Length: 250
Ligand code: GTP
Ligand code: MG
Image 1 (cartoon, rainbow, N blue to C red):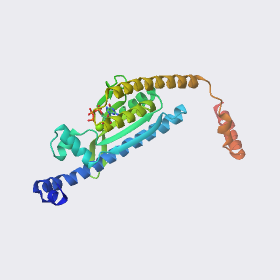
Image 2 (cartoon, rainbow, N blue to C red):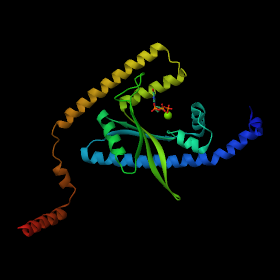
Image 3 (cartoon, rainbow, N blue to C red):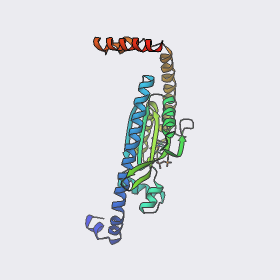
Image 4 (tube, helix red, strand yellow):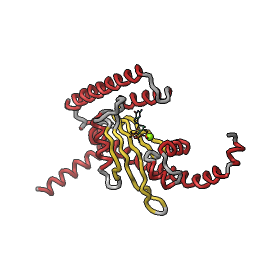
């Protein structure tokens, strides 16, 4: 069908007119929901860094599903071609992927995120405890969070995937292979991928073990550094205030 044919099809024009604005609005709202989740994750990461002196999150990625991908999924899933049905039926219009350093961190991030008062958990799938047959591992959470618009709060669905660097490495390669072969991956590659998933899991266990060992070693005191940032005059005033308070307490 060339452009002239597409535009001459009245039912198509009617469909585009009906769906275009609601779809754009839906994508905008889901972008806001992504932004909310990214802010939450950024706060968790920075507080965690402050508390535990290490960064549990290596990378955060996000995307809002494009119009063609949304429509493709709607057709594959047999969902009705209406804005309401699309909003209710497609749970990954908003997607956030969090890559953590260690397995323990993936659960910690999921727990703290889902414990927040404005986050409603729709479903959680733990493919780390229970990997897919091909070896795929990740924590998947479908969350609902309010997006505050001029008309009031709009509950919006976000798919959050949390995994380790090793799991992410494996999943990206598997994804590329799957698409290259359009789903019909040759048996020897499937077997190799399955082996690679086991090696990735081993790496995760060894890295976590090393990390635990290093963490239990006593870190050097950083008192000197903390005092270094205060100049002489300020130090003198603090010292006087401490003495004053001590006298007050006697
Ligand atoms: P989709 O319709 O594909 O979104 O999957 P689903 O509704 O069955 O949900 P599921 O939680 O199983 O998967 C959601 C998303 O996780 C997918 O869109 C992918 O991003 C990712 N995913 C799931 N399984 C695999 C897998 O075997 N390999 C890779 N690379 N990614 C996967
Ligand atoms: Mg998906």
